[in-house]
Image (tube, rainbow, N blue to C red; front, side, top):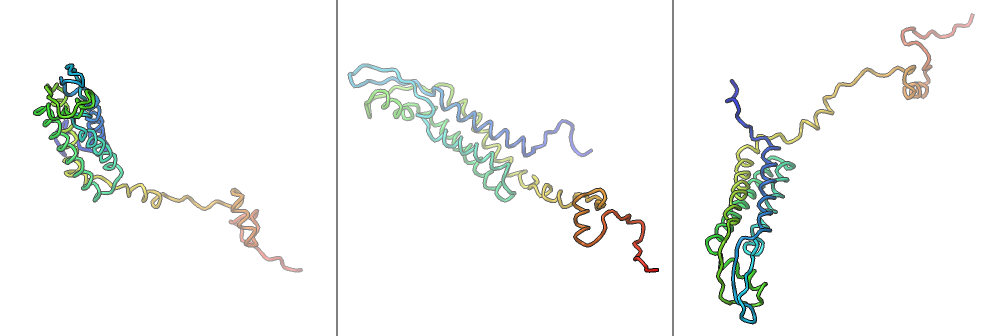
Length: 210
């Protein structure tokens, strides 16, 4: 038997699709609320501030876009370049996971930029609580990193597309068209000084004067 039943092959379309979907999902999480913070505004009034992932960890969105680009490049690139895209995917996923985890562990530091934007106060006292989205963002981040591992592990065995170029070379050619059936062949025959209406099976005989 060639393999275990039900075993899933890490084909190029599957790996690229998983990497692209995970990268886009990771980018989507940054548009949601990651932190809920409270801080005093310019008038001293305490303000509730909703801090999104883009404000708390802008690097996550950047790495997600890098992962999406690297996923597409893994489908179009040559074998040696997949070593680069695989490494980029692995680094992007790991980096995004570290940033998301850091936001969850220290929400006050991560929320300061968003709080300053909302209150107009820099360096004020901030009380913040991280929601569930920083931890949920770890799932697509890990998938992006796993896609990079898959590209590095099996990407070298993916075809480079040379079979498409060789198909035209190996395509069988049909028999040459007869002048009687092909106007272009008939014209070529006339340019060579031949009669295109003559039957090829009958040898031409020169006229002999009697």
